[in-house]
Image (cartoon, rainbow, N blue to C red; front, top):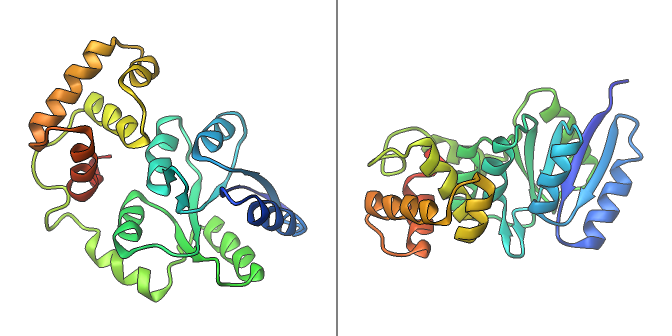
Length: 211
């Protein structure tokens, strides 16, 4: 039997360790776990995972930060959000990014195992409330309107959304810090904002289809 290699990312140690241990007893599931997006990105660079089970709220990190960064380093697996609660705005954002499902922590563990199998088989898994949000994931309306970003601007913007400093972004992209500042100024100009905080808000509200 082919085993599904899954990575559980959750900042609550008791939940993470208990769920990973329980799921690992399933014959077709192989589980790993970690507490942060940074740790998850490091793991998927070195190990082949089919699926990431990702909590929405990870303290200083949010689920939407994972997908662009994971794609950047070549991750092609599927992502299932496993969360106690998520707003419609955040759910819509994650659906637009391409998550395969949103699973409530109120459901039993057996349901989670079945959901993992369905998603790995190529299906999506959204409850009726979240499925209704897919009607707003097209190209009409405010999101996606306005200026287009080039690839370098998109990469810098993704790192800004991760909370990286100019110096850290420069190191990641192997460019000068002054060049990072120049790119940020171009992003400020294109989006009509003056600060990084405003840039983050506007990017998430209006340009998430470019992230």
